[in-house]
Image: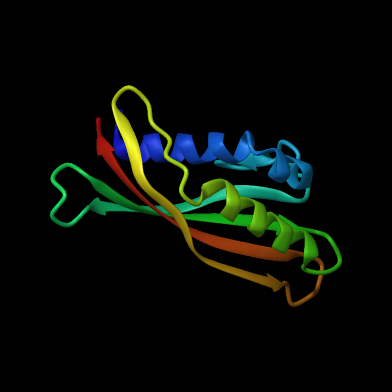
Length: 132
């Protein structure tokens, strides 16, 4: 399994299994949302990967998660950010081939759309993976 696919699958599974996040998003956590995505929902966006400096076969990843809410205000999006942060920070997923040796939310931003119909939250997650 490649590092990029591993960390994508593990982060999505980690978030889908998180009870506090399920209370906010339900089962609306996707790599790509369906055509009629309900709100609120979370999608996985751009993912960058590069060899980790001086760590042999380790790979550093920067993943973007986006929450979209139609709640009138920022509370729902901020609650989702908090639940995601608690679920992701310091998690150490692994399988038979790879493991995450570092996983954390490095950045989050919450804002309302100009028309005020949606609230967005973007989180940047950093992960380092290595072979077992």
